[in-house]
Image (cartoon, rainbow, N blue to C red; front, side):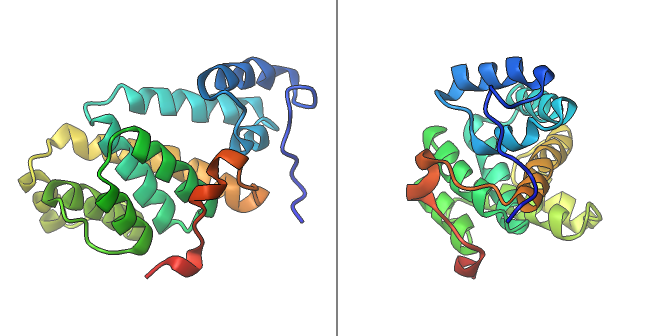
Amino acid sequence: MSQFEIHSKDSAPEGSVPLMEQAESKFGFVPNLLGGLAEAPAALKGYMTLSGILAESSLSPAEQQILLLTTSRQNGCEYCVAAHTGGATRAGAPKEAIEAIRTGQPIPDPRLQALSKFCATLVEKRGWASEADVNAFLGAGFSKAQVFEVILAIGVKTMSNYANHLIGTPLDEAFKPLAWTKDQAA
């Protein structure tokens, strides 16, 4: 049992309430992750702000979701793998790519495979990618600027992955059909 609460707008610190209302307006509900982060208004604001900045990157919405899903799988975050399975589907990522990431298999699309592989490499190596790793990413048609956008995505998602690990965040009803467990990892 976690010692952390999943806040509602009624129980959240005052500084988190406007952010929770913003999330509710966007998603139709306040995801449990955000209810957990609401304990610290600065953390909730940081997560939501960085997520918004990532949305402004040069990566397509589907590519962003591939990164968020890959990072979540690498970090073993069951909550975020489920959530970003839905996000990737809504963003138009190919079903085969989503399932490949969930099961640890290669993605059939070479560009998306290079994106996911570079992301996974950065997570695994804590940012210490080799020149060959970077060249493979650039060789797939990505830019040097996008190297840093991948790092942005990893940072945003690692923040929520770690929070979910500590909170033990239960899946929202919306994500339950997309549940994933670390046991499913190949």
